[in-house]
Amino acid sequence: MNELQARTSGVRLALWPKKSISADTNLPEQTSSSLEFTIGHNVDSKEEVDRIMKQAENAGAKIIKHAQNTFYGGYAGYFQDLDEHLWEIVWNPAFETNEQGL
Amino acid sequence: MNELQARTSGVRLALWPKKSISADTNLPEQTSSSLEFTIGHNVDSKEEVDRIMKQAENAGAKIIKHAQNTFYGGYAGYFQDLDEHLWEIVWNPAFETNEQGL
Image (cartoon, rainbow over all chains, first blue to last red; front, top):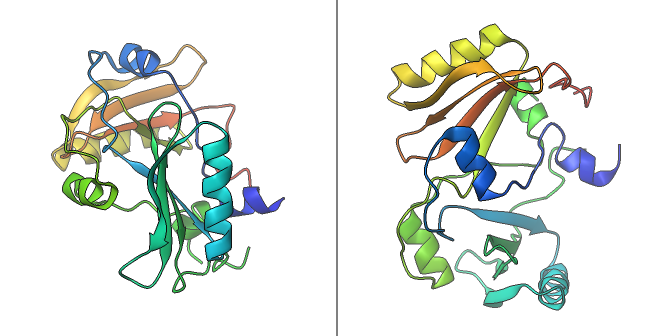
C-alpha cells in the first residue's frame, strides 16, 4: 500500500461528466455552481502549499485566492481546476495529515 | 480505530454553509446545482442498500431514484439530503468495500 492509498483507503475520487450524472439520476441539467463543494488537500508545510498551488497554476488552474495566512494560524489558498471545481490547499498546524498512523 | 474511521482514514467530510465558502473564496453566491457532485456510499449487499435508502427517507431525504439493478450487475439508488446534495447508495459485486484490508 503506498502513501496515497493509505491516506484514502476505502475512499475514491471519481470524475463523471455532469451529463452522465443527469442521465443516471434523471435530474435535469442545470447551471453549474462552484460553491457546492470544495476539495481540501491538507499538506505538511507552508512550502508544500506554495509548491502545489504553483503546480496547479502551471497546469492551467485558475488561482482564486493566493496562499496566505488563515485566521486559525494556518496557511491556505484556493484554485479552480479546468472544470471550475474548487480546491483548497491547506497547511493547518493543528492537524497532522498522518494522524491515523498509516 | 473504529470501522468508519478505518474506511475514511485521512479523509474527512465536512459541511459548510455556501455563504461561508463564498466568503472564504470571494466567489459570489450563485444558484445551487445538485449535479456538481454525488457522494457514493458502497455497501456489501442489496439488502443494505434498501435499508439505508429507507433510513434516509425516514430522516427526510427525497428519493430521486429508487434502488434498482444497474447495467453493470449491481444495485443502487439515489436520494437528496435536506440540502439537496445527491447521495448514491450502491452495492457493486465487483467491489469489496473492505478491499484495503482495514
